Length: 335
Image 1 (spheres, rainbow, N blue to C red):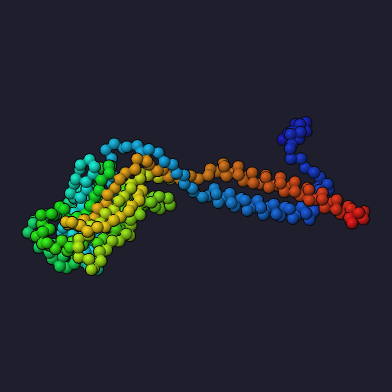
Image 2 (cartoon, rainbow, N blue to C red):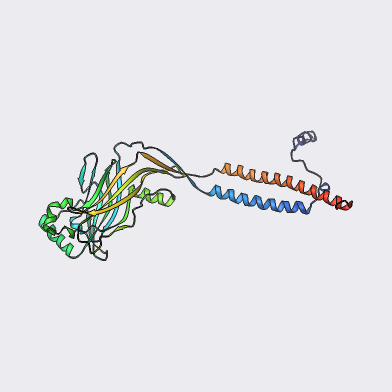
C-alpha cells in the first residue's frame, strides 16, 4: 500500500514503539501489580458506569412568572363518614372578594353507607331536589347514618383564599333538619387525596421523580370522639409553592407543592372544614440531568490511562528495589 520510503518516514511518528520479544521479561512483581491495577480499573469503571446510568435532579428557584388568566386547579377526594350528601356544599372565596358556592370544576357527591359502600352519586352542580323533598331526604340520611364522599377538582383564582365544605349553601334548610341540635352535623373526615395542578401531571411526576411534596395531606384523618356532641370545625393552613418539573426529554410539568398545618375548634354555628391556602411568589424547578456519553468516555480513558501510568511507575520502583536487594544478597552484603 505504501512504498518503503513512505513507510520509513511514517515510522518516525510512532509514539508506541515496540521492544523485541527477547528484550522483555515477565516478573512476579509485575504480574501482581498488573492484577491489582486491572482490578482497580474494573472497580473504577463500574463506579463510573453507575454514575453514567444514574439520573440525578438539579434544583433551582426563581420568582414566579404570572401566567395571565390562569386558574389554580385543586384536586379533592375527601370522605365524610358521618355527614350526608344532601346538605354538603363546596364553596370558595379569595382575597379579591370572590365567594362562590359550588365552585367551577368537576366535582361529584357520592353517597356511602356506614360500611363505605356506594349508594349513589351525582354531579355537585346538578341538584334539582326541591326544598320540601330535600328536608325529608336529609333527615332520612341522618337517621341511616349515611356518609358522603366529595371527589373531583375545582378551579379557583390564583390568589390566596380558601375553599370549604359546609352546609352554607343550604343554610335556610339546616334549622328545619336538625333544629337546635347543630351537633348532629359531624364533619369527621378522611382526606384520600389533595393536590394542586393537573392530576395526570402529578401522577407522571410521582412516577418519574422522587423530589417534592405534592400531596402531604393524603390519608390524614380527623374523627370527632363519640363522647363529643358539640359541633367541631376543622381548618387546614396550606402554603402552596409553584413547581416546575423537567424530565430528560425536556417535557415540563407545572404543578404545585405544598405544606400544611391543621387546627380544630368548637364551632359557634354550623361546622365546616376549611382549607386556607396562600401562594408563594417563588417557583421551584426540578430538572433531571444525566452525564453525557462523551463525558463518560473521557472518564473511562482517564481511569485506564491514570491507573496504567501509576501502576507502571510503582512496578518500576518495586522491580528496581527487589533487584537491588537480590544483588546485595548475591554479593553477601545484605546483612
